[in-house]
Length: 171
Length: 204
Image 1 (spheres, chains in turn red, yellow):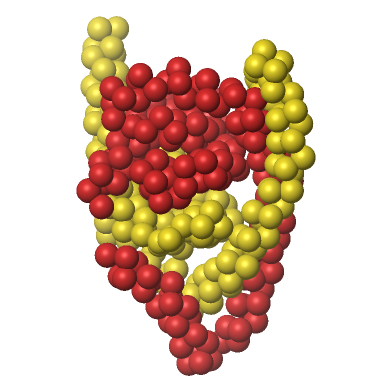
Image 2 (cartoon, one colour; image 1 turned 180 degrees about the horizontal axis):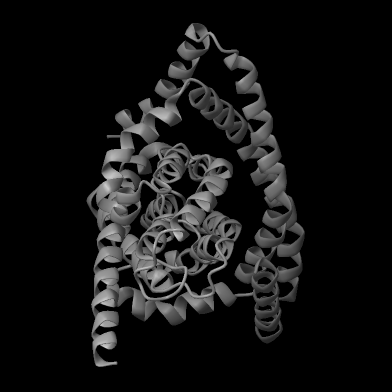
């Protein structure tokens, strides 16, 4: 399974390489402008990331993260989720950079290949920030009410959490 | 929003440190955290640049328009009202393609203009300006299907994972399940609310 997954990146890179050779458009300048976009995006999120990584490191060093985990652990055991994942779960719907900082802390403490690390990875890869997306989308059309969008998005996220636990127990 | 999260976390940490006598650790965490965020950004930088470039090449070669053409027939079942009036379908499919390739910067404006188009449909939830298709679209955008989760893979790589790509297949499975469930959930909730509204109108 890992072998197939390892194909993904080289295949895509080669594909774009072939396109560079055969297309009549100047794709290489597109490539370069895309690269500098990536540079801008990464530099753009750095200030937020610094604030949130510092905050999460503080949370971890103060023992608050441990306390949160231990409070929530009976609940976790009951529903079959490693307690280390919960900080990521709590942060995921609220802030993307915050979740990145949380998952970095999880990787540093438990390792990316641990059960918790894998579950958090799958959750992270198949969900996005809820609050930000919904508020942006609905405020853009000037809607004050969001109907059942918020509960639906949260149910979806919880579903996603359970599916990622289930899948990680198989693979 | 982020400001509130920051102040909440920092205050909580400070209180816990005072109570637990861990002020030295806390001060060390501040010193290390800032540097670690920069290290993280630098380790992500190369891959983010490369991937953004590759995606732009694929986009320029017509892959995004191919994907959005491919997804269009399926949208009939997800956004029935919008499809019937052919309103916003183009933006929705382009938003899907951009999300699929992980072009968040491109997906957002497309999503917003799709939302605008959808809001011009007749409302059928009973609330002004909001309709079922808008809700479905916004909810599905909180769990987009992504072909290559760049940030995540780089984070795993940076943390010394022995198999950073191993989670791609589980993510595909989990993400498709989530998208299907999301469509189903929105349809069910939409139907439920619609019948309730109708019942209320009858009573009036």
